[in-house]
Image (spheres, rainbow, N blue to C red):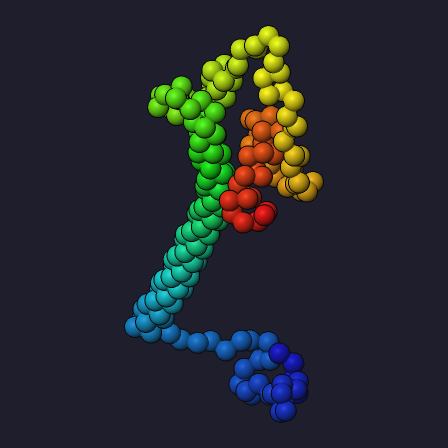
Length: 191
């Protein structure tokens, strides 16, 4: 240390009996030394416990976030499945209405030739069966009703025609439009 150095707001002067360069000697008893070691050990344990606590809190927070994330994904998946199911229900209802109308129409066309087993056929098979059973033999010299005008064309908009093809993808364009026209007529959207 140097003489007359400024430390803070006062001068420091070493004691007169020691030289300027010797540091002060501190004498520590064994009991004080043991207490200091114990204090250092306890401080280290405290730091370790705080660190372990912080790690536990962090892992618990991450677990909770993961659970919430999974619940959110499950919720999104469930919502998507419910929407898909609603779409399928709409299509199933439309198909069931078409099937019912086809069966009723077939019953009318066949009359006494109708058999209840025809109702369990697929729509394609039902149409073919009705077509085969409803063929009229041509009588020579008669027109067998072929002079009648064709039924009037359906009045569907372009958007409704696209919907018809979407709702009845396995039918012909005309049958799909006819079926969709019937569905719209029954629901009151077309008069």
